[in-house]
Length: 351
Image 1 (cartoon, rainbow, N blue to C red):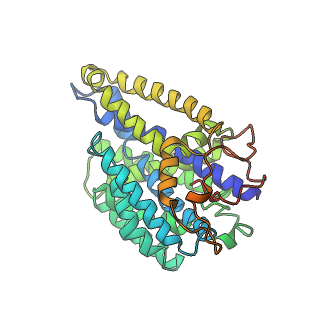
Image 2: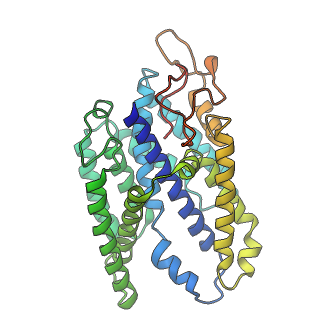
Image 3: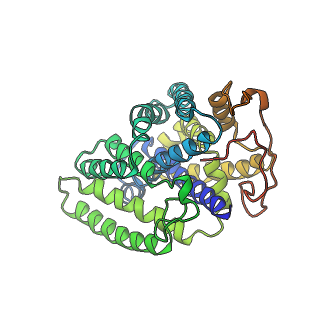
């Protein structure tokens, strides 16, 4: 059970780290340019396009984890997943009224047309196709080509239920890699990202150099975070409430648009992001100490499982709903302690 707890914590923590970066980039992209600033250089070369690849990879990995845990609760896990994606699409459509560039709706649609069929294929085939699309994404600047590749790679990376005990030393028990692999990937990706970014700045070529630099930067940031982050409770809490944090983050950006438009230095982007993420972190820790899921996450889960038969006895999700934090929690972590027994009516995954 300890491996399962570690898996959940690393996935949630990395997702929370990605959400922080996405908030920063989204705020910067909404700023009206009055002229190039040092903030613009830093954002373009060090942050832009470095965080959404992490999020896309984790979406594919979480897709597989949810399917696995849903299979322990119902005989039709893919039907439940289809409903889960339909609810996400509806939330995305509503969110589009606030942020026309939002990603929830496209992610849900890609999940239906790409991940659901791919989940029926052997893992090796998914990995092969994902690698092929990844190569193509370097040459095609459209972000959804890269997102497609990372969805597939995340799906292929997620360990099956039988792999939890005998996870390989390099892959780790959660598909995110163990120390030796993470160290090798981090060092290689950082060197490649630095070299490609320098090349792009000094002799801007075609051929996907910027895309390759951004992808290498994302890999370097993700692996470095997994290597050096030891106390990740704040990031775990942010990651467990990703949907709530993403929607509230874009809402804050829309409300703060007059401030972003009036700022000529770009400092408002940093201040707005730091304040927003800090408030979200405090709220997430407070909320998760009292509830098992975030506000929007609870709505998403309830609508996903509503009326679904959970076992052969015919019991349903709506007949056995659990609304509060009902398991004993490790005070060092934002997530419940998986070594304690869970009520039987609650799905196992939190990805």
